[in-house]
Image (cartoon, one colour):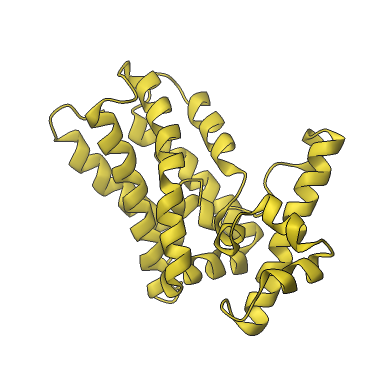
Length: 217
């Protein structure tokens, strides 16, 4: 999942608005959306393991090679989205003197609220697969480094640090790990809690913990 985990699992799978893209990009995005929607529908009907790439391709009216061109693995169909650039853009748009934890809190609250309002069933499905299917969780953990590097860049710019500095890297990956566990907690408890409130609790804990630590961003 190449966007901050809790927000990304809740974000709409449709990504950027089609009207903002050129013709070629619109076609690509429509294909990605068709593949994702076919995947979600088949998984809901018959389960993750029983759903094959060939079935997904047929349902999306594309070839299996097209599916693999957009998504290297079946797990990537569930996890990949277009939200890292958008989250990065929103973080950069926050006031420069705003504490980074508060900037993250604002962006995550907006992403979670928007995504869950638009596609709550997709949010639940993605987080359920994350805890139930080892291959999905493993692939998600692999993809976290992409989001981690994005966070390191933004945090480094905001704090005047080097993105490769230990404290910046630990803070970034600590946040992603915390949000991953937040999403897992939400799914493990049957999605009964309000995800926005859980993310808020997580950010409260991180703010208190990192604020009291030496060299915290």
